[in-house]
Image 1 (cartoon, rainbow, N blue to C red):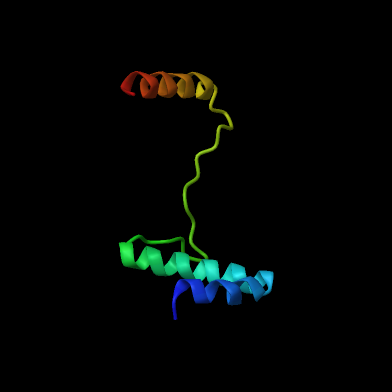
Image 2 (cartoon, rainbow, N blue to C red):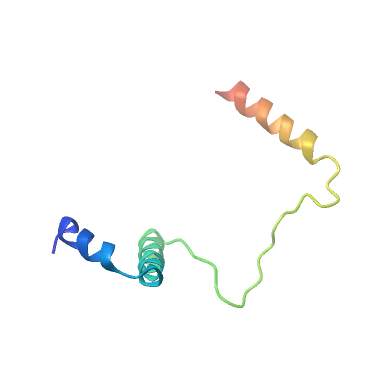
Length: 70
């Protein structure tokens, strides 16, 4: 079955099934690329600007460096 043949059927799916299909495709692509995804129940570090008083300056410096490199 070709992709063009799948589109009409995908359009008929309920929203929840479309989301499950998207999740399935993302997992499949990640596995093919050898990328590890988030695991349920695991913890991951997340940077937050809370108490990062120099965040604005850091961002401006990053933007200047990016602009200079381009």
